[in-house]
Image (cartoon, rainbow, N blue to C red):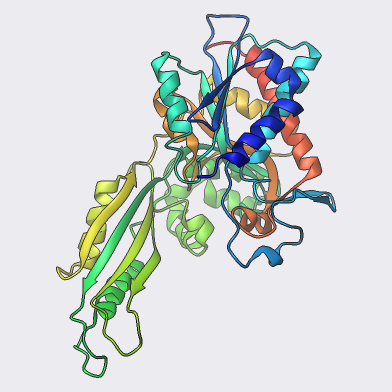
Length: 423
């Protein structure tokens, strides 16, 4: 990895936020990640941790011309900041720093210690960044009142039947299992094929997996999300979503019809890579496919692997797990920490319905789970359904006024967390 870009970003941060770097302790971890400590005035109170990541995904080669503005120029135009990372996740990194810079200028001092953790390798799983920061904090016996990372957003028009924006605070994350399927082939000339080639065997296995996904179910935190959102639904939908004991089969049919909502109610299985063959007149000696599964809380990688074996049901197909991460537990919504977070959302976004939700991806917060009983994942920006494709996609951008509001949110959260009593 070329770390020069991170070092340049570090220099920019030091120059742009003098109050932060004059007041907070700054530590560099694994050469490129950063840990800041803002000492609280009351040593007996548990600290809080705000997490964000500095790295971004690349732009697909050849797609640069599809961007309205160059993907790494950071242009400000038409009311937006354009560029890779504006949503995922430099808005959080710089928004938190802006908030702290402003609070220090106001003379604010937090009563509880505040930690800021900015990893440099979240996209490839955070093992050198967030994981090493978590290990450092663990060695110091630090435990947090709550941890807040990126995650869900304020969806405008995303929850069917809810006209108001819904601020979804992630209280759990799906797990992850990647499996390689392999099928043998004898090779030889394509003019004399066997009844089933390696590609044919593999295609059959893939078809079985797609035709027989794991069972869907409305579990926490998705069930609680619908309960909170139901109050803003039309009456007929309220009746349906507040009586899932009766209408759950109907709701399930609606949710499974859309990839976005289907992912919230079941463990998903997707074939992401396939490899076989070299030339058109030679039979392949083997065929392989990579299958990625995102696993619901309450389930596990072992049960999903068994599901894959059971559905494929062919001894000729090799099934080899490549990597796995278990789903997280569900953080409480009855805690003082959640109430502080939800109350801050309502202050800054008064129209929004606040509800817990399930994060279907993985965040750096997973490395800190044993350091707190309350881990939340929330990016305080309002997005429409059309905006969701900009994460890791073309024309990633953030509205200038949304970025300003994001800064206000983090500043108010720090104020509220300083005032809130320890439960």
